[in-house]
View (cartoon, rainbow, N blue to C red):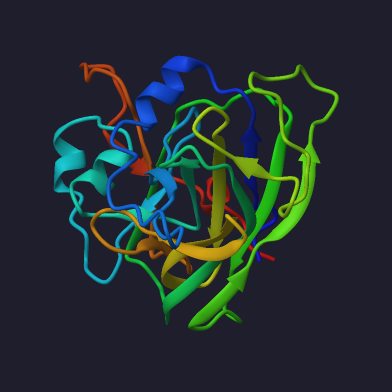
Length: 265
């Protein structure tokens, strides 16, 4: 498994611009009588914060010709359909309600649909920087060679960095269940760090929630299909050099040490 793996929960009174960004059109496709479709989840994959997202091809050669002509960041490979996150990627979800109901989030899991041996032709990362530590609610989703098709549980690690500067909104330290709720006025932002050590995986996220005394599930996927992440030892490792090219600049791609990528044990 990878040495580090986590998912983060941040819940509380999200500021109005954030709420306004994610909540338009929440009343679409809601069955008020049964509570079906009440959970709303915006999604971004892979979330590109302030750390690079390593990429590798999935199921095909994955040409790097465009990289040799410019200096894009690694997520441009994903946007072009050339690569998927390599060994690690982060899902950003904002959970809320499509109605005035308050929802209780009781469980979050992964449903693995494909798990194949993998040895990608290449893996590439870039030299962008990292972020400072803030308190975050952590869950682990580790996908290694023991994982097959089916349900994969997330490990609850509690709150990390509890003594750091408190973010806005404050971290919800409550366990999933009766104390962990979301609503239109109080959504929860969920970051799931997905780590794949050995294989190529396709999966969805399944959220179980309760409303009006009944339990429901919502399956979360990207708009174009399943979440995809690839592991395994790559044949070649590259570092993408960002910035404007110049006569004295390094090449767009140069060989990289495998230690720059996620490590498996």
